[in-house]
Length: 101
Image (cartoon, rainbow, N blue to C red; front, side, top):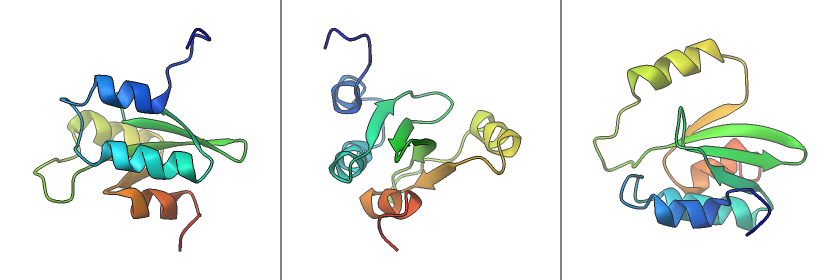
């Protein structure tokens, strides 16, 4: 798209070799729920827009050895109280935005 924005699904495909295998399904579920999603990669994977607000999300593979990095731990500590979520799949992502309980 020529609007200067990087859109989630396009970016997810570009970074497919570097991201957790479930990130594409998380993005699809969020978009289906009406969210805007951008892959930002650092310090967390996703910037999610929902109902006029933003949330940051880090996607981890529940079956992988993916650990939160020291940089991410510092980020989460620094932004304690701000809207961010650590998710391991589409259902967790939808719970984080309040679509699923």
